[in-house]
Length: 84
Image 1 (tube, one colour):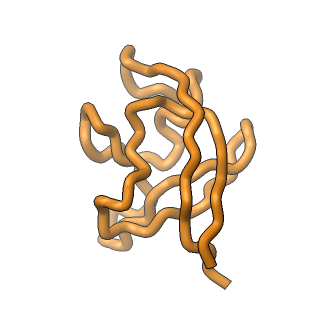
Image 2 (cartoon, helix red, strand yellow):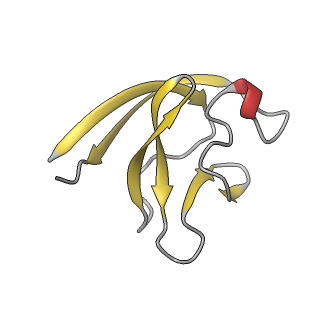
């Protein structure tokens, strides 16, 4: 079942459907957000349009967890498949 989630995170995080990884809900101190499950030994990650794979699902989901000085807050709307 397709669901939609809205949240703030860095504008450079990539939640497009260009990856074979599965989008998953992750609970953060700021509410539910999305990360990627690669199922390839690296587990949960984020994809950055500037720097590629970020090997932590929490990086850049809020300013205090930014990975670089390029962080810019952005309102994301992401569609994902919710597993039953």
